[in-house]
Image 1 (spheres, helix red, strand yellow):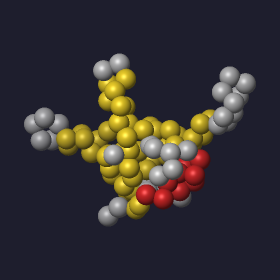
Image 2 (cartoon, helix red, strand yellow; image 1 turned 180 degrees about the horizontal axis):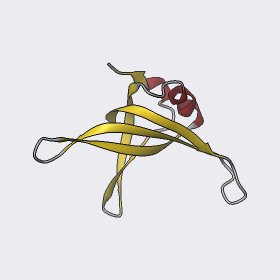
Image 3 (cartoon, helix red, strand yellow; image 1 turned 60 degrees about the vertical axis):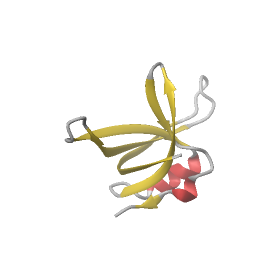
Image 4 (cartoon, one colour; image 1 turned 90 degrees about the vertical axis):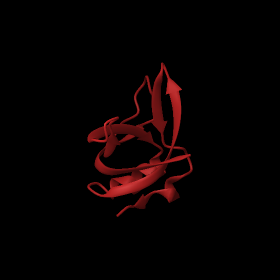
Amino acid sequence: MFTLTARIENCFFTPASEKYPDPSYKVQLIGDQLTKDGQVRKEMLTLNFPFEAYKVLETKVGNVVSMPIGLFVNDGRLQPFFPKGRASEIVTAG
């Protein structure tokens, strides 16, 4: 498991539909990504979250938080995800 530290910019959800029967809860985060030459680039990341984690993050918009994330490779790209059942591990950083 890895730890992500980033500022929460936005929380939104997509309601259930005929095609997707479950609602989708998403959070947009901004964090620092180091470049090869040591510079810092701001990177926005949009992740899906289970409802219980979404409710925690929704109250922290504008704050920097740390949370566990998992990683997998899809089509040669590293994809982060928030593991289910880990909402209690989201903490306000700094």
